[in-house]
Image (cartoon, rainbow, N blue to C red; front, side, top):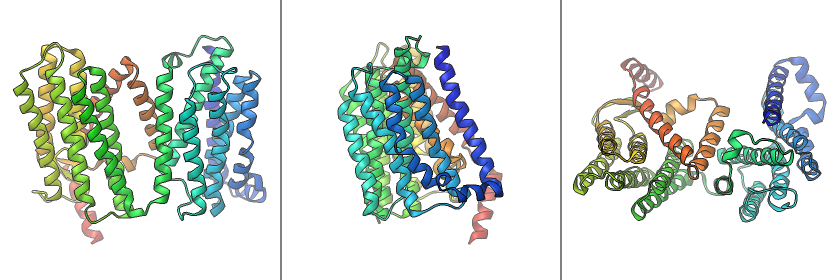
Amino acid sequence: MIQTLLLILAILAILGIERCLTTWGIKTPGCQQFIRRHFFLHPNGISILRFPQGLIAILFAYYGFWGTAILWFSFWMITDLTDGTIARGCDLMTPAGAWLDPLADKFMSFPALLFLSFATQHTIAPRPAIFWVILYCILDTIGQCSRFFCQKKAANSFGKVKTALITVLIAILALYQFCAYEKLASFPPLTQLNQQIVDYMMIACTILAFLSLYCKVIPNNFYANSLTMLNFLCGLTATWIAWTHDTPTYFILAFVVIFLGQFFDLFDGKMARKFGSTPRGAMYDDIADGTNFGLACSSIVYRTLTCGDAPIPWYIAAALAIFFFGCVIYRLLRFLAPTIKLPTGIFQGLPSPAGALLAGSGAICTAQLNTTWSTWLNAVICVLAGCLMISNLPYRHFGRDLWPSVPKSLRALLQIIVIFVTCFALVRRGWSDAFTLLCVVFSIAYAVIGLATKKYIQKLETEQESQQ
């Protein structure tokens, strides 16, 4: 365990040194001139240097030097941050760099994935499934080639998160192999790893690769509607899961699907504001939200209230579920025609995604307790979430106001952590409990912290009036 911890600390130290040196270097005129004079310190030069490094890391692993392989792979993946910082800080961004940098990422990750999947004599399970590895590589390769016939050359948000997540997956699997090869006591988080979790993470990477490719080839004004459709499909899937199964494990799965739909809903508004949408985009968005946050979430509420060892009468559960669904629909309709004039960026009442997060996570947590008092607590949370949505309380826009205030690198890290924890939550009971509890805490925190003060509303009104 100590050797594993030291290896992780060494990687973090390399990352810290790289960040300090690169940040300092681009701010110093002498260093900027030195970088410009040497091609292999240019972003494109660093990308070219990365091409063979994935294969070299695999050679180390093939001969059993897993620690060296991990350090070597980590160092060259960290340089992916270096070239981006240098490109922006030294004004060395080029059209070639837009496709050269992601190509170097593929030269790093593909050999590692293929080795971990196919080299059964040199690795132990769990391994990434061959089918998903091949599909991921095909989709990512097509995405790379699309840069030659599409106008969109640079990596999009899906592509960046995908690259970061696949790197994390490779690192975790390599650490697992390191512990096994050196016959070390496994690092505690690695003991939770199994084939199902690895499969879920690989599937998540493949879906992100598809979305990255999809967003490169479709017209800009279809971005928002595409994400809206994914949110709608999540709602239908979660509803089907909730009504066809009656165990807490599947209720958690249904809630995770709703949670996934919330991410699509978070970004469809952003895409609509940035790239525009179709004439009926707002109507499609309301239908998707009503399906995912209304129908699916109220289905989970009803099923958790009527299943288990301490159910309440079905007609009371049905009334509560219908009440919650009605509150969501009313909230969505009022969003299109507010009854109170508020500045742009302020919601009238708790947003429906937050209401669904509160009611859904509360239902899952209380259902796992499986007692009479927890069942009635579930009902109280459902009513509270519904009342907050139809109230006139002013709430700040999470996607437009709170989320953009988080630094980009931290946003990407949070997205990776959410995907990582979600994959574990689908398999491990302790992780699923922690996941739903965190959702409860997050939804309550937003219900309190997200409230807009009068001073903040007046500030927004003044800013918007001055812009007009």
